[in-house]
Amino acid sequence: MKLVPSVQQLETEMTAWRRHLHANPELGFEEFETACFVADKLRSWGIETTEGVGRTGVVGTLRGRLGTGRSLGIRADMDALPMTEARPLPHASRIPGKMHGCGHDGHTTMLLGAASALARSPDFAGTVHFIFQPAEEGRGGAVAMLNEGLFERFPCDEVYALHNSERPLGEIAVHRGTVAAAADRFEIVVHGRGSHAAMPHLAINPLPSAARILLAIEALPGRLTDVHSPAIVTVGSLRAGEAFNTIPDTAFLTGTVRTFDHKVQMTLETAIRRIAKNEAEAFGASVDIRYESPFAPTINTPAQADAMIAIASEVMGPERLVVDPPPEMGSEDFCYMLQQRPGCYFLLGQADDSHQAAAHDTNYDFNDAILPIGASLWVRLVERRLSAGGAS
Image 1 (cartoon, rainbow, N blue to C red):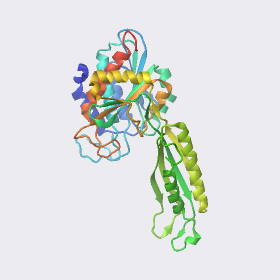
Image 2 (image 1 turned 45 degrees about the vertical axis):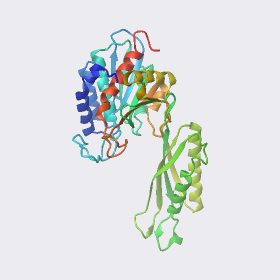
Image 3 (image 1 turned 60 degrees about the vertical axis):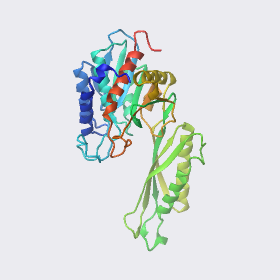
Image 4 (image 1 turned 120 degrees about the vertical axis):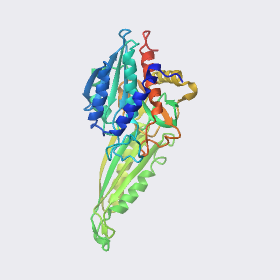
């Protein structure tokens, strides 16, 4: 392992920054204090700073002292989740119902550490943009920044991002193609007619329809789709009624569809709509369907993935590197930045004896041991991709 010395010197500070952010979580598009914290740090290091990009996003711009050249974007997400933290950590969330349960506090801190180190020694040719994105967790933060001209205002020839993972501490996984799935979400409302439970003949019970819809749509992958193109349909909630002796008017199903292929994605949406309509009508009910596609597949470009592989091997050694593992069924809105610019999104393992909980678990806590690793990877990426001789 060959960490950047100037980053190693920041380890104590970075841990303090991360724990401050963890204790003060903010949800998507509400990251006002987080954005202020980030902007104050960037300005204190002499980095040109722009706030309010995509509502609560921040972009820091640093130009190298070795002359003009290409431009690079590195993105970190800032938002927390609407969860209540379970572990009584010294730095646990101070805000009930809000928690950094996905490690975005760590992602932000690693990019801040890299920005600090590079600002002190900007030994590169060209420009790096430090992109601190709001609202990654399903609220459209990447699209909001792009819609406000992110890449027109802050030109980037390439873009990069990372995410912590349940892989062993320090292990790095890089994909030279698809990294993560598209994620659709749906809500199906079955409209029936309520009545007393003792008089079902006067009602149109929405629950049998809802139950049949649930079983039918969860069985779609592998039957309707090619088994070589993985897909998942999961109903996450089924809600109906309040009393044991009453037939309700409506039933609500919500869920998600995960796919890697656009054709499969469209096939499943069509099938879910058809099944919901037919099953409801068979019982005399009707349906309303709300179907959204907030995440496309996250797909790396091979050249930038190879660049990241080289950096990871340099910093962590080839024995800590995993190339082209199976793609993740999770999703990531960095996908939309990768649709507009070549780049790479990779995974950095954080699991050890004290950090076993997966992201989105109320017992999750980011492992501060990987802070200098992530920051070192970003520093070396900038130095190598923006070298005076140009990127390979």
